[in-house]
Length: 621
Image 1 (cartoon, rainbow, N blue to C red):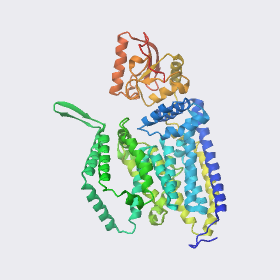
Image 2: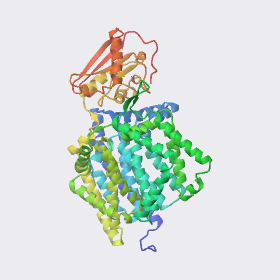
Image 3: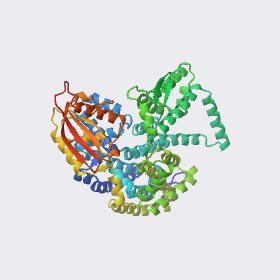
Image 4: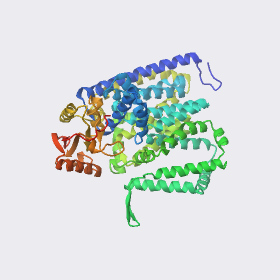
């Protein structure tokens, strides 16, 4: 059958059958690769009992705690714990809970949750190709899967339970929802798109911004498609002139500039009226600005100066976005406690980590793309070439791929200038790059029936080549380096933690003083708490979730060994807590129970017992 425009069509029932076959083949292929990754990572982590470092331990522990609160019926505490997850929003914790419910406790279910997200990345990308190219999707989908499963870096992170893999999945779900909306502009499709954006926001703020900003640019370009460059510049100028005529806009812009200065410089100290004032974070100022903005909107609404009906009727997307994205995001940010706005600013801007300069960071990123994100140089060259062709043919691209083409350079630029620089930040952008390159091939082979027949012939070859490459990639050193960079393999440390945990009783309340990348609070809570069979979680002293030292019956004090000061975070908080413990030791209130020397991590673990029971015990968590 042939449509009026000359494009071949297939009746609904055969097309659905073809889609089921298509997705089944994709599931089998990605499932096989997931099994390979599991054999070469998760099985080894479990067998060698590797200890997760800071970020990985934090995410695994958050997911386990929410699982534990759910199965013990503490729903109010579960909701509160999710609400407190502001720096890293709660979506990753929520994602892990079903895997702990189905597969049991321990670290393995949490790691498998990341592997499941990787499988769904492959299926979601394939579904997006099918929605876009229909019966011509076999080759572009096979190419996308081949690029995905042949990447040593993507395979290595497939079993790392951090935000990158889940973020890449949610990002593709947003794009799939948008493609569905563009195909069928209904309220249901618009609502699904708005909900997908909200899910991405609560996965990680950075990921949302790096996809939402290109979306705004894309929509503006779509709506001004009939205008020339001069008209577009004139309209932007007019919009900016009107915006700057509003005092609230000027206040917000000045505030954003001040936030950037504070975050980039670390803040400053000033003396005002003879008193010293320290400004090193945004504090509660974000709430003041947000409340002023909301008050201004309420004033304009009461004065009927906002044409809500005209705004919501202009595009089916507007109303669902206001209800299903703007409203929950505003409630989240407007909460007085915890300070989600401060968490938002701290995560988006973050502190300097990794390479110290933009040039050094770019060099690291280029090297990661060249050596580990793509299996070989010629694969990278082909992908880059296809993307450049897609850029040249921008106007001929489907809407969702125009959005992707705009997003890729914006994301790369933002990642390059961000002051926290690690190769894993490229993961979401590389997935988009693979998608854009594969889609360009789909355009070439979707022009006529003859080309589509050729595509069906090439698709199995491309997919099998990707699977063979994946089997080789998981055996290479570059895969292993990335896959295990978030773990510590230290037999002495494991033995020390086992010994400390064995000594703990149901009446003990253990306080932790000190932390480092290889001895994070989350790792200690995992190894010395209920996830590993101990009666109660150890606790930190002070802070939002901390407990007073006087309620502890034991203290685990970390002390840097000679030449190992960098192994611990020697903050003012750590130093004051250490002084408090040492003062009690000097007063003969505490006695040394055991000391464990860890020369590999340049730290000594000292366990102290309180000589007299505390007047009041901390609650067993």
